[in-house]
Amino acid sequence: MQRAIERRGIPTVSVTVARDVTERAKPPRALFVPFMMGHHFGVPFHRALQRRVLLAALERLELAERSGEIATLPVTWAEARRQGDAIERELGLKR
Amino acid sequence: MTDDSETAKQLRPRLWETVNERYPGSMITKVDLVPLAPLRKPLSQTRLTFVSSAGVQPRDSLPFDVVHPVGDFTFRRVPSSSTPADLEIHQIKYPTGGAARDLNVIFPVDRLSVFAADWTIGGLTPNFFSFIGYTIDPTGFERTLAEALADAVAAEGAEAVLLCPA
Image 1 (cartoon, each protein chain N blue to C red):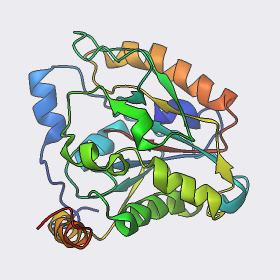
Image 2 (cartoon, chains in turn cyan, yellow):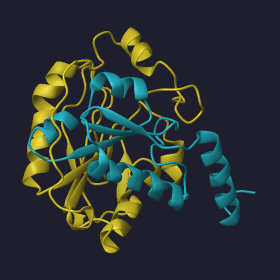
Image 3 (cartoon, rainbow over the protein chains, first blue to last red):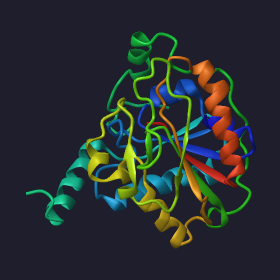
Image 4 (tube, chains in turn yellow, orange):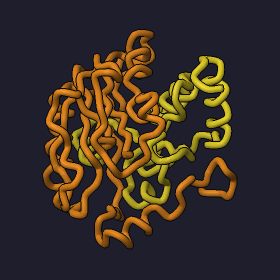
C-alpha cells in the first residue's frame, strides 16, 4: 500500500510495531515503536506521547535519506504504560 | 541496525514468521526498494492524509467484512473532521483495549487536527482512508485495493501520507 502511494510521487511514512514485518515489506520510510499491537501511538489519554510518535514519524518525511530506512523511537512500552496509568489516575479514570 | 535494548525490540516477537506459519503465503516480502518521492514543501505547508489498516470507519458506513476468508479488499473514506465518537472499529486481528478508551492510540484523529490547527502541518485532506489489513492473498491485495486506494489518495490532493499498518 505504502509503496503504491510513493510510486505516485507522494512521500509516505508509516508507524510500525512489527519491525520484522516492516523489514520484509520494505516501505520507503518507517518509524518503529516497541508498543503493543493496536497501540501504535501509545496509550489512552497520553496526548504528549501520541504527539511525540506522530512528530517523530512526520520528521522522517524531511530527514530520511534512503528508501527502506526504519527509524526507532527511544521509548519503551513499560514506561508508556506507567505514564499512562499516572495520567489516568490524575484524570480520575483509574484509582 | 537492531540491538537488544528494550527500545529496539518489538513487543510481539517473530510476528512475520508466526503469521506466515498460520496463513502460508499471506505475508508480504519484497526484495526491491521504491525510490523516495521528495517532500516538495516544508511540513508546515504540506497537506497530509492518514491511511489506516485498523478497520476504523464512520458509524454509518458499511462494516468491513471481518470474516471474509480471503480479505475485504474495499476501503472507506473517513472525514478528517471526525471525532472518535463518529467512528467505530471493525477489525479482529489486533487488541483494541486501548482504542476502545481513546481511539487516538490507533487512529489519532484528535492529534492530527491539532497539528492542522497549530500549523505543524499545512492541513489535512478532507478525508482519511481506512481498510483492514488482513488478507491471505497479498498479490491480489496489491493489484486491487492497494492501487485503488493509492489512486484515491492522489485524487484527494494529499501531499504527504502517514500510514498505520495495524
